[in-house]
Image 1: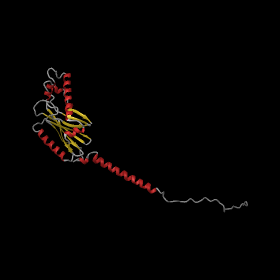
Image 2: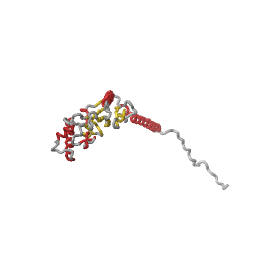
Image 3: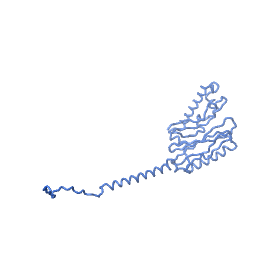
Image 4: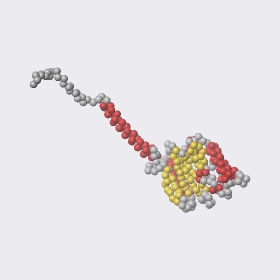
Length: 262
């Protein structure tokens, strides 16, 4: 209309964008890493679950996987209404089987004709060492104050076998002489404290007199070893009563002699 002619020959058209559907060269590598990570995570979850179900709870050692390594097989009240508990060592091994049989046989003898006797237990797990402690309160002598004594079993969970006293002592790098010295020192402390608190008068009862009432001839007699919280404890029974009324002085903890700390 205005006499203008348009030259379309040099018209600058927008170039068409190429559509490249090829995948990046590292696409499959990334995909492999993602799936590999998922597989690895799944394996770790399975291993963790297996560990929790078998190793963290020591299920691979147990006869009954639904129970603890040591559990109460039987509980009842004695003739005076005191609770008694009979333990079962839940380890699948010949040594554990023999121990359980020995405990069962002892229980039958211990309560035969003595309905007032008391038997209780304690257990402690320290690394690969399982310690089981039996405490017996025995009224069979007929006195108003019973005899108290102990027996322990220490298991190596790696081998599922009972440990000897020598093996337990070696774990803490101590000797029987070290044990003897510790117990002797503690008895001296008992004596001096009793004198200080007025239970004893030195002129009437010296240290040898004190040991006589305790029925202590050898400090290592009837010693049983127990491991608790990384400590080596020696249980040494002794008589707590005398004409001086010392049974009021002693407590259950006084039978424990801490020998070494791990």
